[in-house]
Image 1 (cartoon, rainbow, N blue to C red):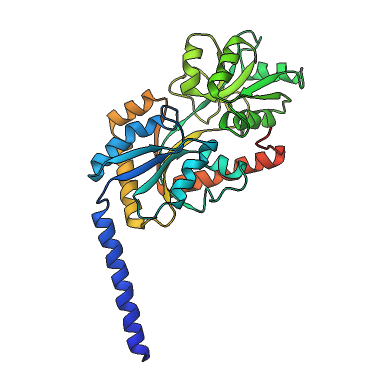
Image 2 (cartoon, rainbow, N blue to C red):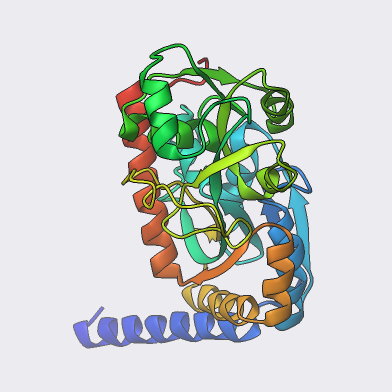
Length: 325
């Protein structure tokens, strides 16, 4: 083939591909979208999507069908999303647990960073350091002094090895140079029952779960593990305000898609998410689920999740945490 004809053919092919992509973005979506949520209905990861999904479907002109796929730390649902066609009709609504599971669990058949496009963040759930009221401490400073005086004698509870509550407390204990014994539970509800009963003295857990016990004074909140205070517990100081730097642990929530989703379709989703999270009624509804509304662009969300993956990977490797712990 003469060189000029070859060049012309390449140009025609490239133009055709660009036109095809533009047409796809312009017509997207032309059918219902499946949104996989890799946790059971009603939890802190699922509830925000019960607010956002209907609004997103309304904005796009197609229904968003929620598909709960709980199991194995969110990896069953994430695997289903990773293997789905990259056409924008299968999405994943998840949290930072997505990247935690990605570095904690072995032999996954997907990569939690490289196999996904991070479309946009919709909010964040803060966590709080709790103690049973029988513990003679009222501040983080007092708690650290109390724990340092009893190395290896205090327990802390979590909803399971490698989960957010486990790693958040372990990060705090590492930064504060504390030696506590981890007591893993099968569910957060079992752990909270023992914490409220005083069978374990302390834990770090999400504010939505903790707040009712704090306001009823059945548990004492010492600090929020975030850079800013929680709007739901405004009188509780942050760890940084309490003198502990570098132990922040947020549960951010956002929208993901298979990596090769058409860029213009992804941009359309990102733009709509930004508009939806800005709506006063959506912000109020998200707050009612315990989620603080907080939009972040695709690039910012991707950078945050990559940094979270690196942070938790360092901690898991340093402490040699395994799923059997």
